[in-house]
Amino acid sequence: MLTKWPERLTSVPPRILRGSVKGITAKIFREDTDKWKMRVTYYKGFDGNLAVPGRFRNILDMNAYLGGFAAALINDPLWVMNMVPVEAEINTLGIIYERGLIGTYQNWCEAMSTYPRTYDFIHGDSVFTLYKDRCEMENILLEMDRILRPGGTVILRDDVDMVVMIQSIMERLNWNSRIVDHEEGPHHTEKIVWAVKQYWTAPAADTDQQGSKTFS
Image 1 (cartoon, rainbow, N blue to C red):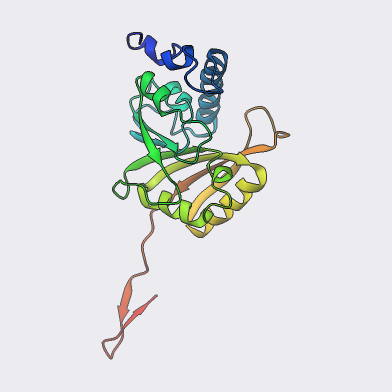
Image 2 (cartoon, one colour):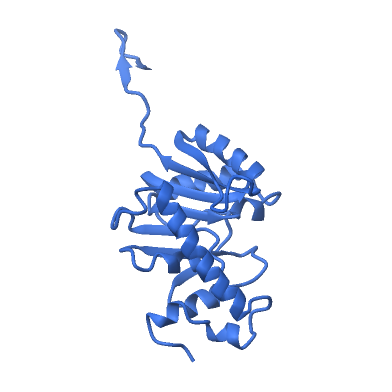
């Protein structure tokens, strides 16, 4: 039986207690909840905007797993859409629902069913490792660019080699980005890339004496 809100958010979901989700135990759930509290605190340390209440309203978690990232933000005035990739090894969407969170499935090799500039902030944990050899990294980042508003923030965590490749594509998208060490220190094989989508437009067109338009 589901516990009442807000205890429901951190209580072990019934389907985990029943053993309905292979590979997920109560111990794993509690450890994941604690881990994401620590990670979100770390994020707020290097991204001051995330620490400002109301700075971000619409947040997307591209690979939500148990919903720990969203749960760690529960006291902030925002909402998180939790995406479970259809390629994920374990289907955890039911756990997300039982925590009182919202979410759906998504194949990140395809466009997301949402309007452009829907989200202020996009988070992703090991998304590009999951989709390695499935589709082009550029296509995933282009879709992220479409659904992220100008001035919006992205935090992606992945293997260091993957993070370096991600950052190189971000630069071609005119995003400002930097690589940040793992919360456990610089020697961890996982790194974080933090980026902000810039607001930019095509150069203004000038009309020459013959009436033709040129771009400066």
